[in-house]
Image 1: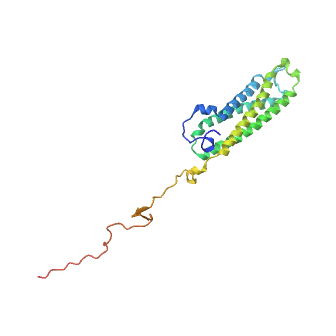
Image 2 (image 1 turned 90 degrees about the horizontal axis):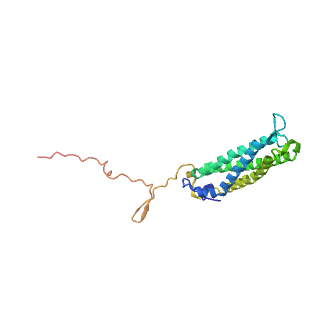
Image 3 (image 1 turned 180 degrees about the vertical axis):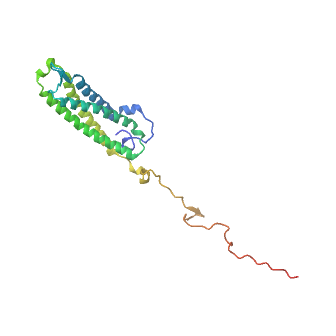
Length: 231
């Protein structure tokens, strides 16, 4: 994993290095996932519906509106998720709390794994409906390129989101070196170090011994009586 520190990131507050960030495999996979989602979304929205001699538009995937709607949903939400986690990756270095870092990584693991499954369903669903589409439903092969592009990039999205899931799991397993912290640190309270014991003449005196304040001896002694001189 890239980075040293808790959950694959460096120490909090370190300077952000854009060159190293762009070269990270996670960043590359994130950008590819964003592009693939955009292609699926734009292909269906722009050319995924055809007009068969009426004012009503039909989905190119076997006239099944659910196929087009599902593809648009995966593409649009995939764009938003990629944008969100891209910003989270940028700000992750500035998260000082170990608990907050852990929550962010766990969220990425869950979302990436779930979206990998949704892209798999999208690929299977679109490919199945496209195989059932009759040639007469697409005059002049209208919308065929958009349909093939949606299917192809749905498959590519499975690979990129699966890679993001693996990277997130590795980041979570990397965790943090707990020997650098104590439970007091995790709770936001620094441990208190007691004062070292004092030494006198080579011997160590315990620091918890109570010593009476100086100049207190003789305070309780009775005052001397005054005697009248005899002439």
